[in-house]
Length: 66
Image (cartoon, rainbow, N blue to C red; front, side, top):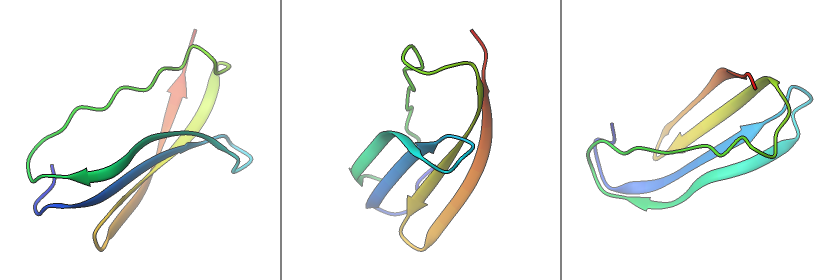
């Protein structure tokens, strides 16, 4: 959920810290948004994604299982 209109960037990294995909890199309006990650070119395993928005950033872990 985005509280104010801001530049948002969501990037997926592998466990070694290498950038795998940029899912979002644009200005978004306030509200809820849905983002899909196409993992068809990725191997099964653990990945991390980082969300940057205004003065906010967070890193979360995700697991891809094929």
